[in-house]
Image (cartoon, rainbow, N blue to C red; front, side, top):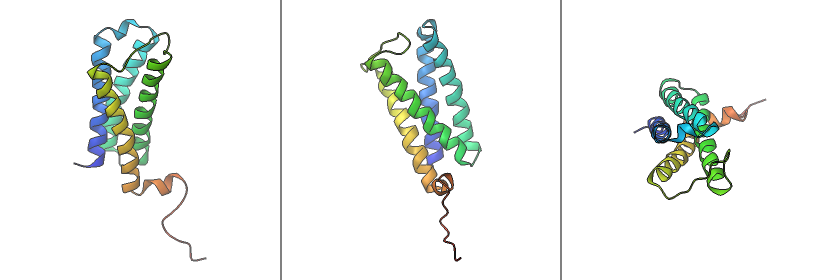
Length: 130
């Protein structure tokens, strides 16, 4: 299975977990409920883009989705996020966290494997003869 497919699956998993939680009552938690909807839509769109568009942009978006969603969860478990406090003691917290870590790792690995990293930082693998 290709790295992009694994990355797309990771985005779908985190989106699915957030959709499940939204229906489970998060929708009534103000700003956090609204952000869960954003996560669901973003995860679905990014999953499609990662498969359909062979550019570094979807990989960047995939890494951003994983990193920011995981960071928001860590903030919610340590000090609270928009007044919401949560814990790590559920299956869906671990499933989402693992899928978000996979999203970041796979996005970076795919960018490296596809030779996208050099183009992102302005370097080329070709040496100048001048």
